[in-house]
Amino acid sequence: MDTGTGTGSNSQSSTAGAVNSEQSASQNHRQKSDIAWKYCSVGVNSQGKRTLTCGYCFKVIAGGGIHRMKQHLAGEQGSIVPCSKVDPAVRHAILASMKEKEQKSKEKKGDFGVENPFGHTTHSFDGDEVLEIPSSLANKMGSSSKGKRKVTASTGIPAFFKGGCDTSQPTIKACLQSKEKWENTDMAIALWFYDACIPINAVNSPFFQKAIDQIASMGHGYKSPSYHSLRVNLLRNAKRDVKLVVDSFRSTWTETGCTIMGDGWKDTRQRPLINFLVYCPKGISFIKSVDASDIVTSAANLCNLFAEIVEMVGSNNVVHLVTDNASNYKAAGSLLSERYPNICWSPCAAHCINLILKDIGEMNDVKAIVSLASTVTVFIYNHKFTLNWLRKTTGWKEIIRPGETRFATTFIALKSLHDHKDSLQSLVTSGDYKQFLRIEKGKDVKQIVLDERFWNNCLIMVRIMGPIIRLLRICDTDERPSLGYVYEGMFRAINGIKRLFRNKERLYKPYIDIISDRWDRMLRKNLHAAAYYLNPAFQYESATFCTHPEVINGLLDYIETKVDWCNPEKLSQEVGMYRERQGSFGRKLAILTSKSDRPENWWKLYGCDAPNLQKLAIRILSQTASSSGCERNWSVF
View 1 (cartoon, rainbow, N blue to C red):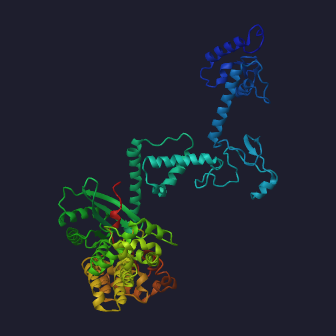
View 2 (tube, rainbow, N blue to C red):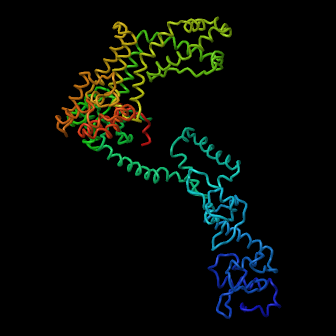
View 3 (cartoon, one colour):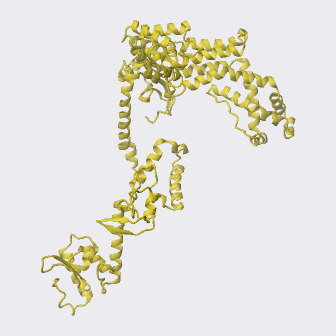
């Protein structure tokens, strides 16, 4: 068939021409994937330019390529004369192909078919599409130009929008989605949570919204990782990233020192495991978990185990070792201090304070008060009427009930019950409570609630234990170093109890004996005394215990026995500068910020005139006093 001209074709039907063109296209253009190649043929005109000939009307097109032929076959007006003989089914197929290609092109450029929010049509300008925006609207947007403002459509986002890729802001497509679409997406996430029994508080994870943003940025068609990828490849990569974070902490360990925390626990298979973690002001790093099933936990074996961890971290970086207070751990800590003279061992401060609370809670007087309080609380929560009556009162909050293993909750429960004193007395004196007076326990509860001595005893116990519970909260946290607050908390607790009983020894002695006994055997360490003395929040206040001989001797003993990198005489001179507020310590700003700044940060800023003492203070005040971090759920590691 001669594709250069249309002569001789009148004797042929349009259908036959289409068949011939299909055969020619299949023979000569098998590499072409566009649907329009089936309905045209390729030729060359007299100028040597490639031409396309329609297989239906035999119109010759010398330019524009296959897209121009598709416009001809689809019947589009404007750029070319439409074909009048094309089969309707072919026309529909060509139109569908053109729309699909246009949509793919928009998605590739980032334009997802969002309607123009300004209601203006697009026009072509130097190969880019632009939106015509009236000058009045452009001026409102802060434009300095006059007339119409051009916005490129290649990105689908107006040029005056800055930070279009910011994931913290919704895209235009997201903003224009229907309410039903938003609800369907939320429900899909919710059903996944419910079906997989994922705790709802998982949405509070800092990685949750990041994951959602990354999924949204991938666009339509993203598939989630497989089960194998999550447990093998991605887990390996996550472990590598965590290792990089831990390695970045090593510079902090060198500068501020660190604390090795060790504590035992049992997993679901009842295996005795020992977790080892490293604490520094930047955070806690999980180092190792040892299965102690086949290890005799003697002092020598534990010491060798601790020494292995010390060598992994660096013996010069370790300032403090915190473990359980068991006798074998205590002996192992002493052996480790002999092997590494610069390392101090001490038991967990939070554990020591909990034992103080336990001992006080077992006193006969305290037991009696707790028993009466428990009677009231149990009666209230065992009867729906009394509980509903109280819940309808203004400002009602639930009464805290003691936990079985958390000794502090006993005294927190007393405080909570005392806060509800007025509501409880209103309940038992109301006419609605008469129905419970026929019950023996109902009578007992009314008598307890109306007894002012009971409430006074509750208040006394709350005031006695208040300072100790506050100290427990300080020690039982990973947010900031707590070593510099143990001594001060104990001193204030003891003195507060004495003032509460007006210095009558027969009244305060039982409580003071319990606190002193635990403190003397567990926490009265030179390291704690040195941390208290070097804490500027207590050194420069009027009512301070820093001048107490016990504190000063503890500091000097620590300097003489644990500091081998500096001349003790220089340290002694710099201690005098710090005590007398000389040099940078006497700055007005240093005095004003001594209580508000974190102690280690305060020393970094104002300790420049005493470099040796500055280094010592930063290393001591950057440590934790407890091993509470080991009690977190580290099983995933």
